[in-house]
Image (cartoon, rainbow, N blue to C red; front, side):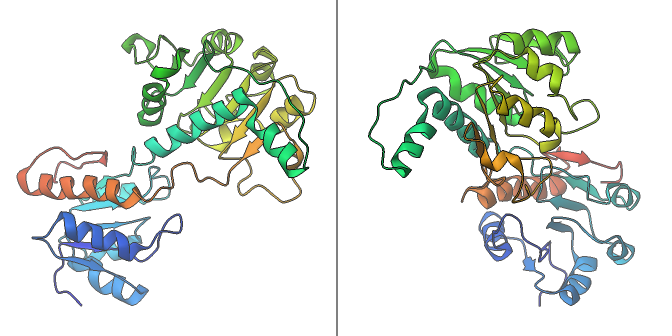
Length: 323
């Protein structure tokens, strides 16, 4: 076991990925630093008080009392609601997240889902499964209007990848006066949401789940969408009113939905969404790619250097004055 390691990787993994692979990737990025993988709870208790940087899903607050060298906790998730941020800040420990590392994969999946509905590939797959050689009418994605709710890292990656498709884009962001990469930018107020939805062929949800966005897409918003509209949730399940969505899909008041996230999640086996042919479901896999650790290790390695040079931390959630 390393003595006084620079970086400690906690044992709990994410999305089925090995934390050992993460530790190895960090060693490649930081050859002049000591990276230790805590494989057991006992090892975590021994190593965390010695470390300058700890990275993992979360950290137990009782470990902070003896962690006198700790300067940075690098969360391996984009969200930090589960992290004891206040306790870390009280101990003078900076907190960063993994925001942005999932954006390319999520963006590609969102566009893939739009193309599936545009070309009705899911109908082709259904007929193949049934052994039916029967033609059916598809549509074109070109000239569609795509509303992207949230212009953070995911929304920006989606917009970038839409540039070659000759579609109109509407972005929804908290401060529309800032503009953005979309053809038009509106805000989160009710009038703007309905204005955007009324003109949308596709609505892609790429915003955080918070008090403003919880239940953002409900019965009224779904009613505003044109009958040919498709809702793609690449964000969090709670942004959509699930019961209202089920009703809209059942009566085909909208064309369909593609959900990488659901509310509840995991989706129960007897949930009606499973049986709807106009609803595509993936089990929260949009951001899961082999490049996960590479992108996160890049951020952590840059932040380790920033700690030593006094530079700004990337993806900072909390940076106490003492760091």
